[in-house]
Length: 288
Image 1: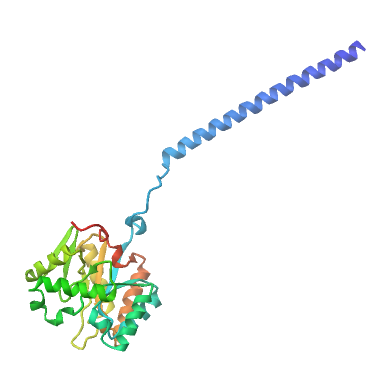
Image 2: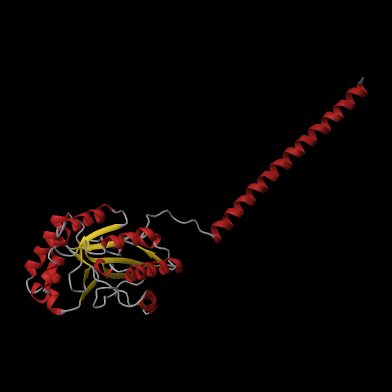
């Protein structure tokens, strides 16, 4: 009995020791694994720092390897407005329409086209004056008070409250750090508009018309101009190009096709993104 008891005791002692050794081994392994995880975490943090969560900026919205193009169209609503909208929807890209107040009320068709522009999510509407300077630019800009009144009339009648504007017949810029006046005789009028709170946006590249009011040249020539401007850093703001043409140049099949091909090639190059003018850097800041 004693032997049997002793035999059982030995077994129990052996089993107890084995259990203790196993627990110790498990504990050591667990610690080693925890230490490995800590070392691994340290390595990961060292090689790949965890990014801080910060509000999105303009640059985050625009990938660093992309250039930004702002398609803008002046003088609408006009002949060609519907064709413009068809192209934008075909390519699913946004644009900004700088509209003329008188044109929005010029005819029933223009009123209808203005409503199309207003309701279209791809379009942003901005101020291009009410009278378009009566197409008498030299005399128009001689009276800064009248110029401000003209833009105010367009703003109020068309309910354009963002105060982003473009001067008719002039490539003028008045943003915080951009001051450009193509003709000095228009400088005081431009300054008056800025003091009134208007953010004046000109352009970096214009697709001009022929004598027949169709787009001059072809899309390949315009693509080369886009590349040249970016390559030589000729934009008012680096990596951001404001492009201009007009609704009324889009009435013939060739012009419509050329603009469509121009946009298509820009998209397929995968080097550009398109934005509305309200996304232009600094345009939403308070004017100095």
